[in-house]
Image (cartoon, rainbow, N blue to C red):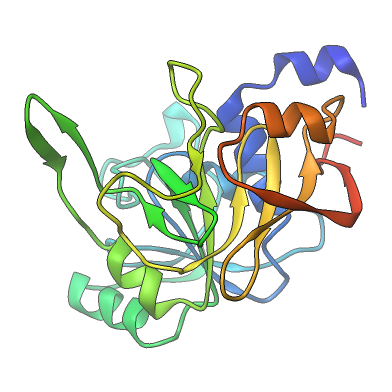
Amino acid sequence: MDTAVLARLSPREIIARRCAFEVKDGEIVNLGFGIPTLTSNYLPKGVNVIFHAENGCFGFGAKPGTLEADSDITNAGTEPITLLPGAATMDLTTSFGAMRNGFIDITVLGALEVDQEGNLANWAIKRKGLWWPGPGGAMDLCYGVSRVIAALQHVDKAGDSKVKKRSTLPLTGKRCTKVIVTDKAVFNVKEGGGLILREAFPGMTVDDVRAITEADFEVASDFRPMQLGLD
């Protein structure tokens, strides 16, 4: 890959680009708040899916330009979306029913922390002695969707790993995560716990990933540079 192009990618774009490769043709895909919502912009060619937004939409497309945006058509993070032919909108109760009852194949959720047991924490951090902002639909997705992808930056602002041995934050879902995608690496979570390093950002070695990762992990036999759709 062109190193100059790689250097221009933001962590958010790296994560969203790589998450797009976890989506399979024909799936129904929920995208959570923040970084996951960008995934719809980077689907590989030939992959056609139905995207779901928690606030009540099936069948949205890529984020529109500023002039094309409609304030009445947004995802659950209040970001503008486009509606594709055949899209459906609905009330929140119906949308949550789909989330809880197995109608969605995969969800990509932003995370504050994940750990080597597959636990995911994404709803609260402690500020001035209080936990906020509060839990939301991610709890329903963690237990109603069989394949949960955690999307997060690999380290926090202090340089500490967000891929933990054991999460220190209140959990959104216990042992629910199947794949972890960061701006530095991609891990599979084994059945029963434990991580397998599948990919690393181009130019990074296994030792580089170990140096910034608190969690223990094995290395896949086919370990390779991260897929980013730039070829």
